[in-house]
Length: 238
Picture 1 (cartoon, rainbow, N blue to C red):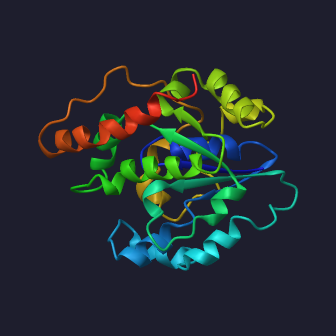
Picture 2: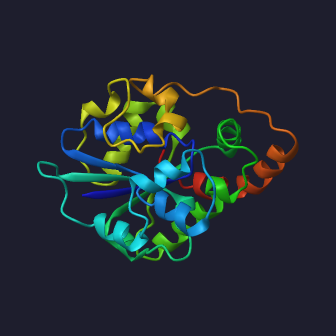
């Protein structure tokens, strides 16, 4: 099985990659379209030069790689994708050949976390509009894809991950509940900038009960992002 997990940044996406990567039967890949996205947009990101040097910059090449035979000895292939990377010109036909899942998080939490690492973010930087667009596109393939909320996973990792596995017909593996400190061999080169907290973790942390209170430009972003989050939250796995 090939699982494409679609989220924006700061959505628990790396911890989810570590969770699936802890399975003995699962290969993982970390944001394979990142370098192509930077090349095509010219956007400057932290460690951008290193990112571009570390991955193929041709999105068609990346798309082909996602459907190649899975690594020897592995039955499943977990793909961590950022919705904002899927700009015009990035192939999407391959998405029909994978099991698509959408990982969401309350935008107040995303905006507060992302803003601490990236100056003056926009709605497009965080993938909210693109996530809704991709979800609607995948719905056209047939059965609506599974949606899972990061806070639900953090409140009940075992229960929610078991329900997620059942929803996509993936056998449950207790190994998904923990991972070693220090990162994963599949981490992108950008891990040094973004992954500090998850590198210190060994499992899913409980959610903060308080949603951040945002002001100014951040509050304006929240107002724009909330309808996109709420659209998918209404049908999330419970």
